Amino acid sequence: MSRVQAIELVYLFCAVCFIVALKGLSSPRSARLGNIIGAVGMTVAVGATFATPGLHRIVLIIVALVVGTAVGVPAARAVKMTAVPQMVAAFNGVGGGAAALVSLAEFDRGHASFGTAAAVLFSTLIGAASFTGSAITFAKLQELMTGRPVVLPRQRDINVALGVTAVALIAWGLSDRSVTAAVLLTLVAGVMGVLFVLPVGGADVPVVISLLNSFTGLAVAATGAVLRTTLLIVAGTLVGASGTLLTRMMSQAMGRPLSNTLFGALTASASTAAAVDEGGDRSVRTGTVDDVAVLLAYAQRVVVVPGYGLAVAQAQHTIRELADLLESRGVEVIYGIHPVAGRMPGHMNVLLAEANVPYEQLREMDEVNPQLPQTDVVLVVGANDVVNPAARDSPGSPIYGMPILNVDEARAVVFLKRSMRPGFAGIDNALLYDPKTTMLFGDAKDTLTALVSAVKAA
Image (cartoon, rainbow, N blue to C red; front, side, top):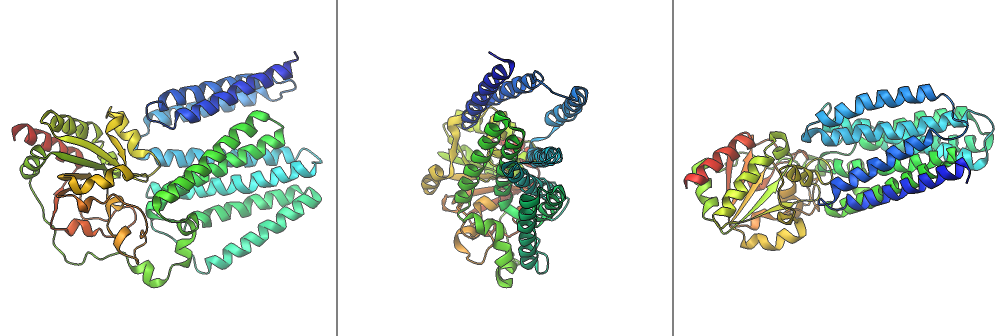
């Protein structure tokens, strides 16, 4: 067996590791093992690459690995749970940009076949769009810019012009194998990525993260075709396919087609875009920690709805302590998990897993909703948009049509919020003014800690 054949066999092993890793990530129980298997596969793949015959600039490759490790490991270890979505967006964008640059570097080596030219142009188009789009997503999540949809004047016309330009550059690159055309296409794609994400806002951002992840995977697969590396093709295709399926599932969870999520702001009427504040001067009912503690302690069933505010307060361990305390008093406690709660898919699952919340207590929205009319208390901790009745009852709302947790059907609702500020979608929540809703204002962790003490004394 030649060295090349041996390397291909090793790459096959690594590809199997990636497939098994994806399977493991499909469940919270096996996610940690799936991550480990994926990391092992990638480590073996990198090591095998150094044995490739004719590999040049090994010192530069090692330097790049050292720099990447020095940046990536501390960043991953130090990142707060609230900032994980931003980190995912940033790392995903870097991957797309790297795929585009590698393809461009290979295209510059000389005369390319039609297939190679097509793969290069595809990789640069998708990779550059993923890079800049992920940068805008990062800025939105990090609140470096507004999270609301941003639509430029005549943006639809600009989008059409950019699309026509991209097609023309692709035709030029395919006909003349022009590196200039590929570079210009990269620049145009970068602008397209920015304009692609700017009109997306609020609760739709998790869908865009998933979609851009699939873009990066496709760009990597195309780069693998340019380099004639089977492993890159397999890995990129896996990421592209899984990202596409996740995007589709997220769109279904949002209750809207993907086209509406991505382009709804471009076609929204002025009246629809303005229908974001219905709160007016309505009053809310506030309660005390002692009152809520009695309500919880003597309930038969309590549903906890976690949201981004829980992650901000780092209160996952305290909510677990409160749930354990209620269960010791005979109260049934479950967690109602909305598919897009937080700022990325699975955000709440990861957060609660960190506090060792039993997996069987984590219930999907479709399983929880039928039980809510028989639920005594719903404890909403830091969530907003995913329980907003406007998604169900207000056709003029930007989130209309998004499936929600129907917590207003429960006998009582307790809302833990810092203030009356709207959620990430930027719209008012009529549930806050419902007579059956009790508000507890303050930091979620401090409030939950006080609730634990009050329940013990109840």
